[in-house]
Image (cartoon, rainbow, N blue to C red):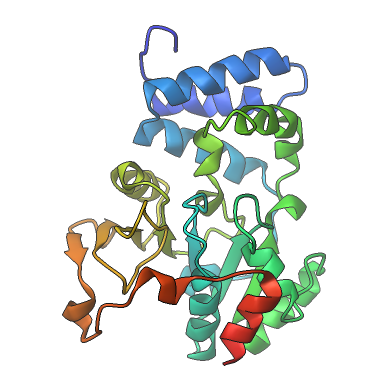
Length: 276
């Protein structure tokens, strides 16, 4: 890393496993993550890390449903202050009859993460596997709360917190959307920075997603969403690998919104917006 040489996917897979080991010192983990970030993470490195944490995740048997299911999710970290766009979109898609297996967490940089918002709608973060299966069957929607499925992250938590306190992002800031334990075949992933569009799409392709889109809204300092407030950069993966586009609101018959139209607040405030 200090020589600024990129890892192969196989090397990244091994490195990710070592990061999850309590036998490796926090100082070494910290140095590695910072060096990787300063070099700039590649698609192979992202795919290697994601592969490891997919393997280490607690599994749940959803039968054949993941092959028909989608996750609509963002990396977070864009600091746009928007309401819970991905969560609301996921609920609308589920209401239309498409199975949604959403994977997420509580807020880290915003006022309302997906877990904070969905709890307000009655979603149980500690739901049993049986309840999750029942919800998916009856409502076409279930929520996999990341801490309940990724115990391997416990060995990295203090290091990540220490690095984050210095304002430094690492590869872990973009891993969440890639490590859904159910591995749904269809993915719509928003990224907080334009530079992640291409490597995330290539990583998802490498991980075997059937059809996926990685998006970044060019509004303000950027959004991890498809947006009606400006252009959206779009890159496909899987069967949509050929997609490389910029979407404009007018392409779909929408008037361009103002970024302030998308502003959210606390989970309670966002729930009111959703109900209205």
